[in-house]
Image (cartoon, rainbow, N blue to C red; front, side, top):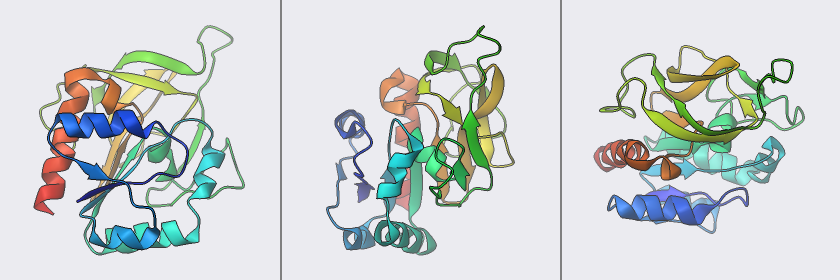
Amino acid sequence: MIALIDYGAGNLTSVRKAFAAIGAPIVTPADPDDLARAAALVVPGVGHFGATGSLGPAWRGAVERRVEAGALLFGICLGLQWLYEGSTEAPDVEGLGRIAGVCDRLDEDGGRLKVPHVGWNALSIVRPSRLLEGVPDGAYVYFTHSFAAPVTAETVAAAAHGRAFAAAVESGRVMGVQFHPEKSGETGLRILRNFAAMAAGS
């Protein structure tokens, strides 16, 4: 089963609909202990990094145990940022720390660029990955965010808004996207299909 974690910081309805559209229904556990049966975990989210503080010790511990036991972990937008050590948006809130680095605010470049970065932007594929299999270099996806993760060794696709940032990451069983696949047309559905296929085989 694929578990969608609801911590009060995302539009879960659109994510559920997207997974249903590819024939991969998901469940939303009410209790951290319910994650014990999940083959894959999805952490969505929009808005302020401080909202991830709702993922307290019980949820964090349950997520960590499932990943260590072989489950996949997939972060979407704010959920991707939570995979890192933290964000300058909320310095007192710790991220999961599965990927090294800290998320930072995008640069407005002296007013030339608007932040938040909202709309369609192209992906620059950095290296092959299971998550982005079949997604061509230059494919457009839908973003809405003010903060972003740095480009590191875990980055499988980058995008740019004033500066380059990590648009998709993959590190073993931990992966995520800064954009919204549920709002990114066929490219987004392809990514969700890839994730669901990995979950089915895990």
